[in-house]
Length: 121
Image 1 (cartoon, rainbow, N blue to C red):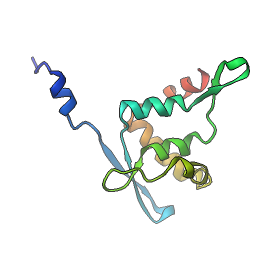
Image 2 (image 1 turned 180 degrees about the vertical axis):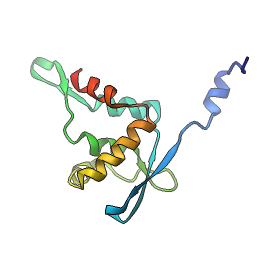
Image 3 (image 1 turned 135 degrees about the vertical axis):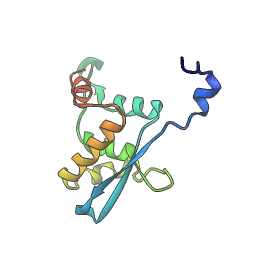
Image 4 (image 1 turned 135 degrees about the horizontal axis):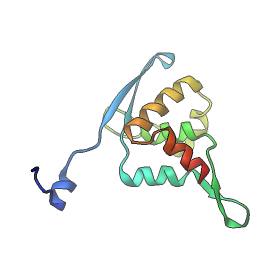
């Protein structure tokens, strides 16, 4: 039987990961990190907006750029992009954004089914 963890064990665990994604179109590599629970909740919340009558509806506009901005970090783990830069990031090569989006999705346990479900909800 494995060790039963305490709250202190869990809170002290270094469980955030990064992966490096080759982006030759941009002349180098981009580091993508796993999100914290709070960051993932914020990203998922950003996929909805208030629609008619205040009813929530899907907001997947520029979703790939938003995901990349939420997960791309420098070599010290600091975010590469600000919220103000997401629109400009969305104007970059879709193939590269898709590659980074896929890496971030996998690293954060957000597979195609999860994203599609978020779109429907």
